[in-house]
View 1 (cartoon, rainbow, N blue to C red):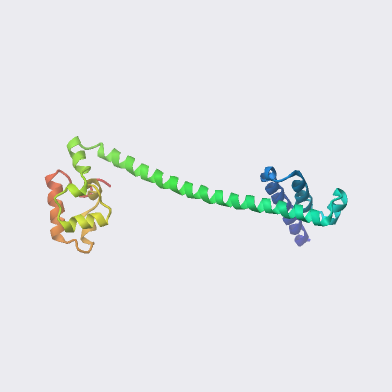
View 2 (view 1 turned 90 degrees about the vertical axis):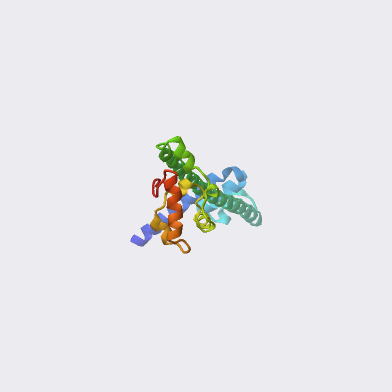
Length: 186
């Protein structure tokens, strides 16, 4: 009894799904295709019954059915591509929103400092007097401005290969002479 009931529910769900698909793509189907697909896929009628009602030959009905299914397949393919594009755009939107929020947060943090300090924080790493070693480590970490550098702590840099105590002293000296310190921006 339970098996029969679940099969009936499944059949009803399939009918509703087919009806929804036909409704979505109804503008792409001819009226004959729409009627034939509805009768066979939704109403579960046989080709012979539909043949007797319409007066069309069986090969003609099957050709119309085949063309209609082709239209549905093409529509589903396009729908799938649109869905992929939607998710790609949604992911890009999320990344841009995150980036915007980071920039806004950085601007909010920077607004707390004097114009002189803000100018020093906005200084590109290329304009600092750092040695090649320090400069190359900064570039490998995508540290492009002093404001990116002051987000780190000395411990973060000591854990890096080719960045030792002398490099830490060099960076600290620069920071102190410019009124800056490690971790002033998070």
